[in-house]
Image 1: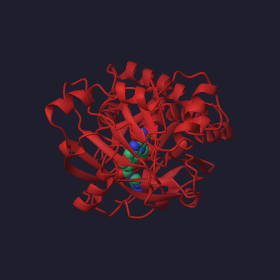
Image 2: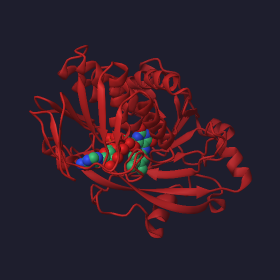
Image 3: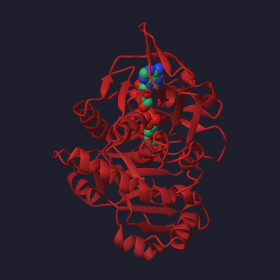
Length: 377
Ligand SMILES: Cc1cc2nc3c(=O)[nH]c(=O)nc-3n(C[C@H](O)[C@H](O)[C@H](O)COP(=O)(O)OP(=O)(O)OC[C@H]3O[C@@H](n4cnc5c(N)ncnc54)[C@H](O)[C@@H]3O)c2cc1C
């Protein structure tokens, strides 16, 4: 089959990888450069973690995610994930952290509960006072996102896939399996996959009814040498307290010997903004607001230097409290994948494989949709 993929983020390239492995002819159309720094997938890191609150389907899907990444690393010849483990903590005894802990235990996944005393002894960088629930999960790490996208693009080119940067798709014909290019011209294939991230609404109105774009701010932080060394050996951190909480990505050493920066972000969806026109640089005030969420939860925060803030877009599930990926058949010859709500990178390889399974008839359309929704692992 010839398959046209719109979008060269992790969703599009993950699917392209699995489809090329299955022997298909693949063409990837990307409106910007490849990798595109305005896309959601192109940042220095994205977390993978086992803890998923009450979302036990996604918790179990992490096993598939790790297995799929391993197959990808074997193809790429390099492992672009740094294992760190994941520390979760909360000032509340009955929120996301407690729910995650119970779900991990119920399923028999490795997890170590930490009371305040043990938390303080093992993880002195965090402030244990006032923490009511905490655990360490060994399943967690940092996916080197921008490097993964770049390496995938190189692998696909080597394998004969056609990658077309600066090729914006203006419209699709979901029954004909064709796309109209903004610069003029029409391409026809057997199947079109729209993997357009935060731009999906323009090409797939049925997906737009389910997800909306959300502007998110992350803070990059520089550290004095002693803290940099300590964080380099520290798990990622999720602090679920208050209305939002924050996450912290520790600095890690990439295989090429370069060190990534410490990053702090939150999971409070702005549900606003325009991925197309908005700049990706955050203001000092909004970056500081994200950073300040760590105050009282990290010791010696005044020694951390706020370096810069960045803006990133993703789509989020329109239903409050739901964070389900949306995969929809758009017509007889087109699908859309929206790995939304700020947690889709870690599943990029396994959802790509699941899409290829469906194309090959190894998985039904309904089974694929439910798999992506975290309902069927
Ligand atoms: C701040 C932040 C933190 C996150 N943290 C995590 C995390 O820790 N763990 C995790 O698993 N996930 C995380 N995510 C989510 C994850 O990054 C996304 O789920 C994932 O990158 C989405 O990939 P995508 O391929 O769907 O979209 P994108 O990477 O945005 O790719 C879509 C591509 O389509 C292109 N495109 C759009 N329209 C067109 C068109 N008309 N024609 C041609 N090309 C087009 C775009 O230019 C873009 O390159 C985070 C996201 C953000 C923003």
